[in-house]
Length: 89
Figure 1 (cartoon, rainbow, N blue to C red):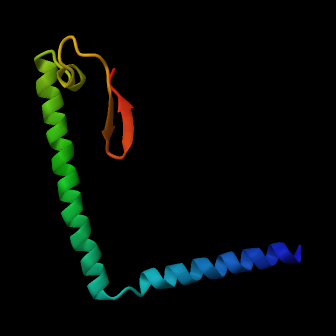
Figure 2 (cartoon, rainbow, N blue to C red; figure 1 turned 60 degrees about the vertical axis):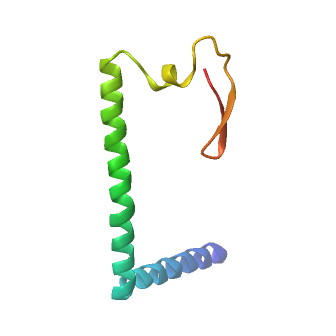
């Protein structure tokens, strides 16, 4: 029982230290985090919106990306994309 109490106490102490570290971040660090979030968030939103627009436009024409990815008569093949291997269907 004493070991469990010690574990809870050490977990509580760790949580208190983490909260204290977050609250006491200086202004330069907050500014860097804000600029990073703004910069990367903008690119993520632009990419997401572009994908939605392209998907809507292609579906209106009766096409999909998978159909455009393979040439007619071509066999499925393995591709390396974003750090993972995938097989064309």
